[in-house]
Amino acid sequence: EAYLFQKLVRTGFGTNNVDHCTRLCHASSVAALLEGIGSGAVSNQVCDVLKAEVVFVIGANPTVNHPVAATWIKNAAQRGAKLVVADPRRTELARHATHVLQFRSDTDVALLNAMLHVIVDEGLFDRAFVAERTTGFEALRESVAGCSPEAMAAVCGIDAAAIREVARLYATSRASMILWGMGISQHVHGTDNARCLIALALVTGQIGRPGTGLHPLRGQNNVQGASDAGLIPMMLPDYARVDDDRAAALFEQLWGTKLDRRPGLTVVETLHAAADGRIRGMYVMGENPAMSDPDLRHAREALAKLELLVVQDIFPTETAYLADIILPASAFPEKTGTFTNTDRMVQLAHQAIDPPGQARQDLRIIVDMARRLGLDWRYAHPREVFGEMRRCMASIRGISWERLEREGCVTYPCEDENDPGQPVVFGERFPTADGRGRLVPAAPMPADEQPDGAWPFVLITGRQLEHWHTGAMTRRAQALDAIEPEATASLHPRDLARLGLRAGERAAIASRRGEIALRVREDDGVAEGSVFVPFAYAEAAANLLTNPALDPYGKIPGFKYCAVRVSRAAPAADTA
Image 1: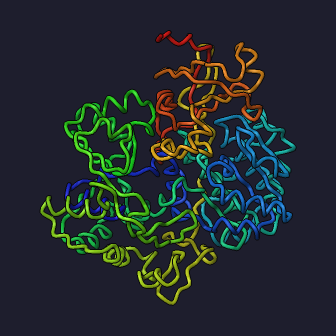
Image 2 (image 1 turned 60 degrees about the vertical axis):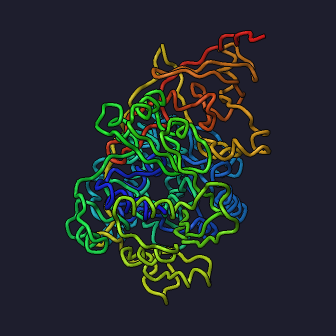
Image 3 (image 1 turned 180 degrees about the vertical axis):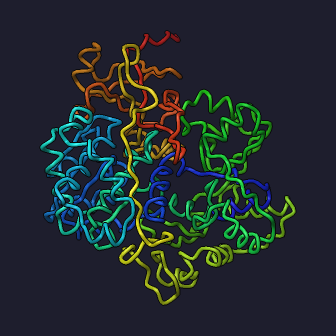
């Protein structure tokens, strides 16, 4: 479906204005990974933590967001691995950690550069690996020279001795592995955050072996697959750039039509274009921008201004309420197809039940749409689509449909049908032009807006265990919604006391863009001066507050940092 959707937009609509949810979760990670090591996917699978001596988890709350990964990580810690957890919030995983770094929000680069400073200054880097397999080391050395732990401690709030200890631990272990989440990526400097993590792995040679490497924990079950399939405005399938004439010509030959060489607009840029009239129509499949985009007031106004909004989904989402046309689609048990997960595992899922009522399988909707546009599409089964993907995506060329039916899942890259798949990659070279990893320096930079007297708190948004993303599915699950039936804001007990609020009372949280009212929750894992709000609740939509400022490279919004104020909510009006 993801492959066909981007093909429909490019060959039927004639534009590269196609994007998906990676823009709101790991776009900055992918930008840094493609730049640094030539691949936008993980180097090692999650289970490799069992082979690591040091596991470094930063900007992630896997207990809530990736429970299976959290189980692997906890098992690794129980078996003796040193677990380092770095996050502005102290999460449940910290209970299992040997080292906890609760750094100030938005100071990731300062902390990571301080670790790099220690590794370079104390000669803990892998000289052979740096010389033979990387470029840019001298520029990196110069960039971090002034970032000693003593200098950065005042910035990130972590004691210099603790930074030195963790840096030495990571660099000198037999095998160290880094895992990160959207606490790294969802910043206006998210690409720089990821660049620093890549630099840590490259300078120490902690990549290309079991128990090492870089693992961005992906936000959905198929966001990796959708990225691989080309649902990116500047990338064709398998990450071929749309402005690469040679790559584009190959797709023109396969698809039988000329392609636009100009990179398209990203999700947030598309809504800006809709607001000022440059975009007049939008086709949304399986996304909910009226809840997921930053500065929702602006996003919803932009959607409302469209001359035509088509929404293809399984439930009437907040975006569907604004639609001119709704195409009832199918849920995963109602169709056959593949998912590619965070581990690069291509998995085959079989249809179990028929779509209800007027709902149709998404593939059939997309194919019929293409035919109405005059395209001669004759796909009768998902296996035919997957076969075409294999012809244009070298990474999955060795994965046949028949093989998936036999084995259930295969890990890419998989070069031929005798290749068992490669769970660990980059053992000998990186998929870059010269085979080397690129070290890219990053200097600390502030967020787009900072707390001040009028807006003294930092808002951090995220997910919670019971509700998935914007809640379009899980808010309809009675058992889950009964556990967490309404939005709450988590604050440190001392902040609640200063505000004169007690747990369970209602607070108003306001930013320069909007205001919501919700109950407060006491959480001493939230740093003083911060407030955490999940974004799954339409009645108190956290993204009414968030800042639409973008990372200049990954074009991702800074969902993890904006300035807000917190006060007691006004009494609810008496409706009796």
